[in-house]
Each structure stands twice: as structure tokens, then as C-alpha cells.
Image (cartoon, rainbow, N blue to C red; front, side, top):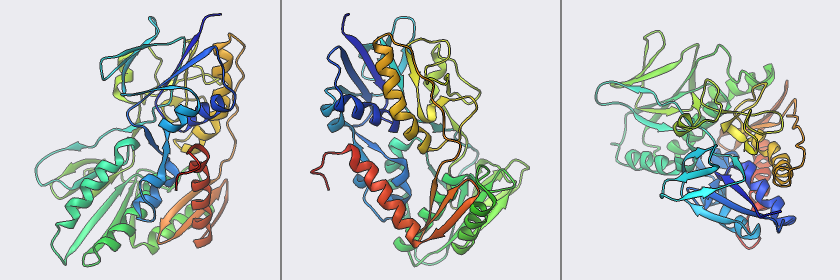
Length: 379
């Protein structure tokens, strides 16, 4: 059998597990290539701690280059522009084309940007794509350093899911530390009537309490739509005053996927079967936020983490022409939501608990996860 070309597009959480699996159990007959826009990949679970100023950016990152070295994989630092499913190759932004026998896509998601009308718009921080968040956050912090002393600043978070709540509380905690001379006022727009629609009643109550303790006003059934002068408008035309808008809603697939022959759902995510193989596309796989599983899974990094080891096995099977095994998503997952000021909420199904010890527990879990993939000599 000739050498099988396995291509990993993107350096998401699931692909970290794939590289780890091939590092532990090498396959001489499989040549692995990874395409990524960076040698470092952010771990989504640690992002709130970084936004809150409790750890450095580097402490949130997985060293993909070192992981590729361990797995004897070639790393190309260029994002993909498109994938040709018929000719079995991928075109990269650097002009290179990479052929494959088996390919896996783990490129995360992006956000549908808000419409923008007029001048003097609020400062905008979009929370996706994750890979370039540090650049947008740095730019916003630079602008904040130049704000005059005194007065108030209204920070409006758009999105009532776990990411939207967590992001707003973390950012506010950091801004209050960075500029205590400014009165930071928080507001959260949630399109649904309940925060954290996938969580139980107790976790939702704990989250609402945490938002209240952080001085954040919740606006339920208000879908943020358009940035206008001095604020953001909602679906019913109401204007919410804002100086800064954190955009954490409307997850969609990357735009370039539309030009491919990959089957996409209404949000631009790649449809996959329960084996994580793309529907109707043999030897093409997708995992993490960019994959549309049936029934639909929430956009949460924990599912990409759970998919990872199974994806590694099925990619190995595909390279050997062996039958694939179905993946069964967990019915309940543990969700750990940072609430700023060194506290967090643990949620699993209807169970919920909060406290400083939960935050310390979350930080230990996240640090262990990152250390699992990084060289042991790193701090």
C-alpha cells in the first residue's frame, strides 16, 4: 500500500488529540501535514482568565509546532482558502496546494458581524475567530488607555449564552482594574428569555446572580443587530447606549466554505455523520465548532475535546481502508463559567455551584489540559 497523505486543516482542540495519538503510536505508512495560520493555538477554556488579566496569552496556548514535531508531522503556516473534494487537494493562502488521501477540518467558527450604520460607532470587540482575538483585544485596550479620566463607559455584551456572559464579566473585571478612574457600566443583551438556554434552572440562576453582582443589567428578549452612533439597536428598533460592544453571538462557518462542495447547514457549518465523516464525502472529516452534528450540539469547546480521541481513531481507520466507528456525544457535560473577580460557576445538567474554589478548580483543569500537549520544559 502506498504512503497515505493525511491532512489536518486547522489546529483546533480535536486535532491536538489527533497529533498526540500519532505521536504515541506512529504510523510509518501515513504522512501527516498540518495547515494552520499560527504555530500556537488558543485553548478556549483559558480565554476568560486571560481576558480578566489572570494569566498571560502564552499560558492559554497549545504549542502546535512542538506537537507536530512529536508526531513527525509537517506544519505549513498558512490558512486554507478552499478545499477541492474532487481533485483531493487544498489551496492555501500562500499559493501552495496540498494533496490528500484523507483530510480532517477543525477550523473553529467565526461570528456574523453586526451591521454598522453612521459615524462615531461604539468600539467593537468580536469574540470569534478565536485565533486573532488577542490582536483585537490589544487594540481595544490601547484605545481604552487613551480615554479621559472620570466619567462613565457603557460596555454592552451581545449574546446570552455561556460565552457571552463569561466574556462580559471577565472583560469588565479587567477594565475596572486597568482604569479604576472610570465608572464601567455593564449591560447584556440576550435574544432569548432565559440566559444559558442549554443549562438547568440552578446554573441559570447562579449566572444571573453573578451578572447582578458584577453590576451588569440584563436585557432579555433583546437581539442586538446594528451598531449605530453611540449604541446598538435591537430587533424591535430599540437603541441601547454603548461605548464598547462585545459581540459573542451568531456563530457561523468560515465564509470560504461556501465556495466548496462540502455539504453545509444553514449556519455554514459542515454536515457530518456520527463517524465525524462529512456526509456524502468519503475520507473527509470535520470536528469541533465547524462541524454540524445531528442532533445539533451546542457550540462549546468541550465537544471538540470529546471528539478528539475518536477522530484520531477514525482517521487511522480511514487511512487503512477500515470501517469507521460511530461517536456518541455525552448527554451531559461539565461547564465551568468564569464570572470575574476570581470566581466561577460549575454547571452539569440541572446541577450548579459557584465560588472561588470553582475558579481555582477550573484553572487547574485548564492548565493540565494545555500542559498535556505542550513540551514538559515549558512554564
